[in-house]
Length: 236
Image (cartoon, rainbow, N blue to C red):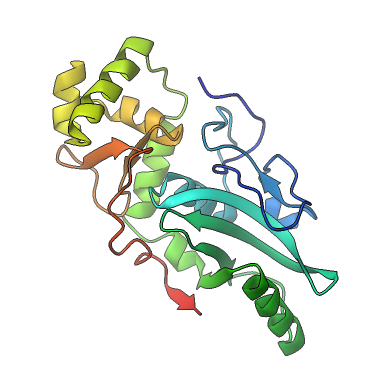
């Protein structure tokens, strides 16, 4: 079972280029003055029922099979100073790092502040992607991630977990229907949702969930074609 935290989701931690990261992740992360990070398996069992847009987006990133690590960064070091960024920064499975700038409701940045922010991101090898609330609410991803996350507390017995792992070790990819037959469940979505939320299984949340949806182990490399198509705007 994953360690229980009193904080909302974040994904696998990694060492950032400065040494000022500290563990933890909270629902008011956008208002905090320090960065946060936690391991992908350490998904909390208790999460507030009312989630902000930032929390919803964090869950979407957490459940995305192409996001290998996720942290919330309040600042980055650049040219001897700390530059405020207040963004989620993700490590993608193909090796790049991306900062997501939620443009709705963010504080105004003048040209100097914007330029300094871009320079700080560039110095850390991080590119920026702007998104808005409409992108966070886009379907079917928004509903799929809410549904999968709602099963995060579902208890998966050890024999079932072992059967799932054996099946996917042999086949790598299975449909929900096929996996249900293997573990003896006509409706395995609760088991799948729990294991996806815990970082054990991977599924593409951008496609409708159904019996023919394909699942795999999170540890296996997931097909990465079009992995960022669900984001509205990319800036180089």
